[in-house]
Length: 153
Image (cartoon, rainbow, N blue to C red; front, side, top):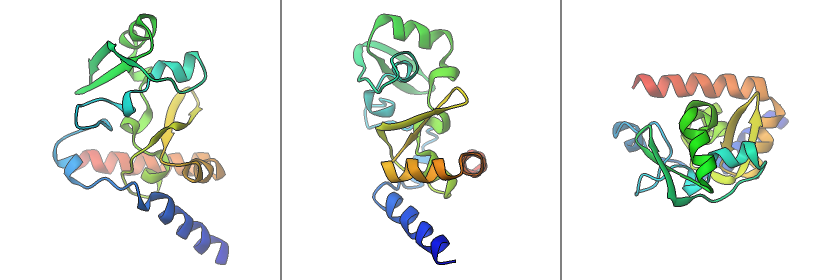
C-alpha cells in the first residue's frame, strides 16, 4: 500500500509542472502545439524512427497537418511524413503519454520519448517515462481511455 501511495505521489510530482488547462481542449486542438502552432517543440517526428534520436526540424521543411506546423530536418523526412502522417506523428497528439494515463494533459520534453509497437510516445520527464515502462499495456490503455474522453468533450 505504501508503495502504491508513493508511486501516486511521484506521478503527481512528475506532472505538477506540466499541466495544460482545459482551454486547450476548448480551442479544439488535437495536437500539442506552441503559440505559433508548431508541433512537438519543432522536433522532427520522422527522425525518431529513421535516425533513432530526437532531432530539431527546420521551418524550411514544414508540413501543415492536423492544424499544426510540423518541422523536419530534411526534405526527405518531410516527404516521408507527407506520405503517412498518422504513422510518424506522436500518439496522443504529442501530449505526455503518462500524463494521459493519469487523466491529465501534460506538456512534453521531446527528448524523452519511446517507440512502442511502431508508435511514438512522448513524456514530460524521465520519471514519467519510467512510470510508463513499469506497466506499458496498462498505462497505454488508461491513456487511450483518457484521450477518447477528451475527444468527446
